[in-house]
Length: 319
Image 1: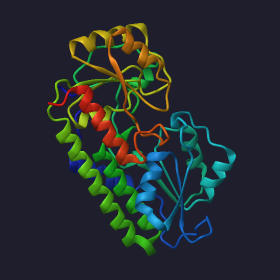
Image 2: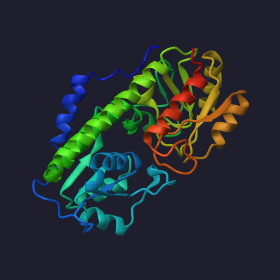
Image 3: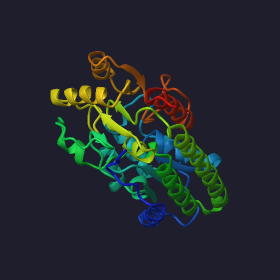
């Protein structure tokens, strides 16, 4: 399978991580602990960021997410109260260009430690298709195809790079507990390495390498494991596909033996089910893990990723 976006060598990722850490504004002294209980007060923009903060920070941090469970993070407009919370926090962990209102609030805040996950990894531009299908497609929002893909956490390797950066930032912000942050980071990075290996092994031999999703959230994952993601919409989950795009998907599904159209839990499944019905395909959930709700196939990042792996294996036909 010809993957359109080339993978970034590990050495380059390390260099990018080192460069990204240079953008962190860290406090070298003890935390002011705005929560009042002696813990580092950390604001996270949405679930993938709060998960890292909680796993790495452990008992030494108090983590608050700006995005509530079940809320589509792309649509977040933060409140004045949340803006004030960011300014009062010891650290903020966010992903620039995913949530513009968060970017603006962080830029204007005086929070001592600002960790932009996007600065810690190599970002790429993904459009409606990632992989061997380079045909021109009509999209309702051209910028979706050209913009940088923010969904770095769905690639365990990139997510591990972010984890390392978060760990280093917490060590600098709260040096008293640096040893614990370092230990927790190493444990999390190992778990992510194990997850990466499960995906590599589990998707190595499949009947098809192409899968259809509602929006282009899985570009990094597709690149990592030699797959092709065909998205109904672009990077914006709320955009609507053109008639030409729908026809392309139906033709492609037949040519590449696609069996399933994937939808997600936080966005309407109407379009996915309509296309699946018209093309005589099945539907299933592939979760971009932007938030954990009662509908999620697991209670945390790892359990949902394992469910995603099983769904891909079933849809692609594991040999």
